[in-house]
Length: 562
Ligand SMILES: Cc1cc2nc3c(=O)[nH]c(=O)nc-3n(C[C@H](O)[C@H](O)[C@H](O)COP(=O)(O)O)c2cc1C
Ligand code: SF4
Image (cartoon, rainbow, N blue to C red; front, side):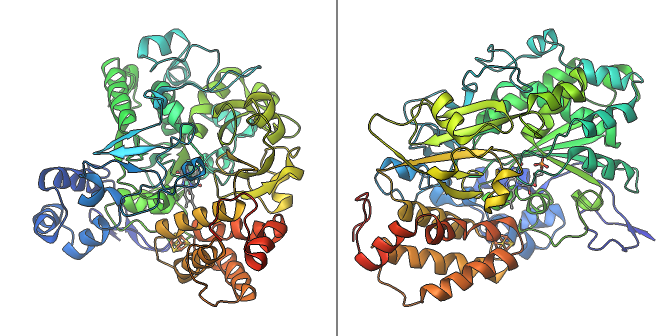
């Protein structure tokens, strides 16, 4: 056996090397950000000395640095205002794709979003990042009460019993019983895959090795999803306490928050919250004088949707080109630097303190039917009151859109709505009464995913919307596997032609159906697997409208120039 060198990654479960955590658990991204800020670009002249100081091959660093949107001087440094070209903002009208268009920055509730020199703003809502979820009746696990009008301070959090669960457990509380409570609560991951949290945490706790890591996935790049934004900006201590509890239960002393570039204010909020907590002895080498220590580091991404995929995220943290890893091995045994790693979404983690305080039965009872707990649903598109809503898991789209979201503008009719942001499927009016949980949508080949719902009314064109989704996937495909790399281009080209933006490429519709199938089954990660879903919905649920575009060259919504 030999100890692994700093930065070396274990590639298979039978490797005879012992992974270790570098003193700085993720030095690559901050080094790239600093170099970019100082030099204004990341050309070889900037990267060569950096590669030497980090002890990595220049080729590897170039390969990593060229991956991200915001390490491009064209986008990051420009004084020009760039508009969001994403599927939700595009529903507001004018086409916003072009040289400087940006990917969705998570402000879908106030479209169109804009970017200028590292600052992201929402139309008509200067404080959008700090907006609390909209009022809903009933008990809530993450935003109880209605007092969340600005960032919660440490004092405020502690007055509401904050850090009590961490302190109870750190001072000799029953860790096994706490893990059992998390498992019994039925909490499943809120980032998309709905994996049971208790199972994941137990796997990490039981994995071989003394060093383990907790990673919080705060990448939130899915168009139509902006729920983590509310927690990150308003309840930072809730997330920090949850990460420390996770560390205590699985045996980790290090936590890393992977924060999307597009939330710069959250970086400030979290940095200040960590400082406050460390000063109060609630984070750091020894929590409240106990033997348990837990430190949290924040690492900012640099603009890339696929970095939200958990293994791409790990590569990004390790300073590598952030494309997804092959699995198995899974992060629970071979995560950051090859160490057993918990990776959970912001919302998932932030649910845990309330579960421990109130018990598994309490949490179970918050959900509807067989579902456990509440869910933060992000509602956007053609609806009167877009925003985040914390509601019982299993609420229906009809309730979310009409009872809470205020319905549609007068005289308008619902045509379609998405699930999972955009990656969970494009559904129609007939599906308005299906529970938004982790089982019912699957019967229709759809997924709740991260819980974003985008509404399209009769002024929208579903074909054009699907085209914008495909353009997004094409831009964000990491290119590692060919079904996704080539398939996203072919499907987007077809939809370009169908919506009158380009000449037909001559690929037959039957072949495009085959390409879609191949993408869904053979792509290496969820991006390529989900990308064909909007087009597949046009062939099934919206066949009439598709037929009008393809054969009659008409767009009933008047959006496409046919
Ligand atoms: C393309 C892609 C993007 C993803 N983006 C995110 C993201 O931004 N945030 C997130 O929590 N999970 C995201 N996921 C899911 C993660 O891979 C992973 O399932 C999740 O972080 C696990 O945490 P959870 O169990 O708490 O949901 C993404 C998955 C894919 C395939
Ligand atoms: S499916 Fe797409 S994003 Fe995922 S690994 Fe393959 S090319 Fe990359």
